[in-house]
Length: 530
Image (cartoon, rainbow, N blue to C red; front, side, top):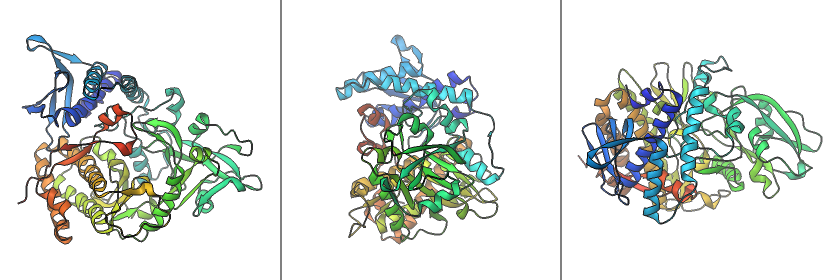
């Protein structure tokens, strides 16, 4: 049995502590010990030395990954005197990490231990309270499978030290937690016409949500009910209309809500820190979503790949309030589904072992859809998609094989300024990436976060296929490189240049914005040129 499967059968508190310890240990391997040459696998065990404090740690490994995304099992242990080893719980491990990073950086982080503890406690609560089945299914199989995938990520990001930490009282967020299979109505505000800022076909899209009728001279604005509890309107001109309309389901991002009846996503502002960031929609992100939708409508994607567009936004046109209630509308799934096809969040596929009769054939289709599209958009058109596991919806055909990839979340889309002659009208300057920023983001999101995650799920079920799966990736990258005239970025990857990973532990320790995230090298699973 794999580590993930075993954890989910243990008591919630034990399971949550073990999962948290494995995530923290995996971050140490990737971001601290491996770059310093202080991590090694011997047999079925990973050992590492913390460079600054000299502490020795070890943990059993059930699968050794060629890209360093190993699967761990059992407790993390610390070496004592006389080669004795002591089991550590997640909090004890976090204390050692805090000591190491304080010594390494020369600065402390008083939030860190509490965030690790809180993330662990959230996982325990989710495991204990998660309903066995969806209490409010639609009865439409494809949509119910999709919603289940969005709401299945109980353990969260396996290479983040606090994957389920979220600010605020747990009793305040329980009703809105996707992992608890929640559903609820949006809350609505009535905003005077002269205080509304918007773009795109807002009213026609909102009509599908069955909003309440606003007073004369006002427009309706959907708001996350949790946000209204956190940031109630103080301007007397803005009226509360209360909960109404089609029920929505929180997706993996927590603040983006899907309305199955309307087949519409509502990306709300939420003044809650989740993992790294406060999840609010800045004004430039609102206008940028619509401008990028217009730009990307003219950027060709290959057959089998499509974009979930964000054609409209509405907010309150008052400084400070616009970020509290800014709402982006994203188009839905049904136009991209054929008979018998089922959409599934990629992160859900990566979260548990993925047993298939022919994993290599399945993977060949998967990689063949996703990799060429992302690489060509970047290297030919200067469009940098952010295809990490939570930004891609995989459409599976009646036989269970991938037939389509849906890219989403324009907040992560950037433009490589070295590959674009003019800057498109309306696209905010925050969407600009340098050549190096573009390379890092594509390499990390596509290969290290996404493909390594899915590859790992396949290999957790069939460990002997992992090297073959990475050779399939290499073959697809080689074809793209040949078609594009052997660009240096792909030439270097195929020649064995190390990949990079976002350093979530170091970013959390520094308490910096996601844009400032450091990157660390990870092994290249392709091998040198053949």
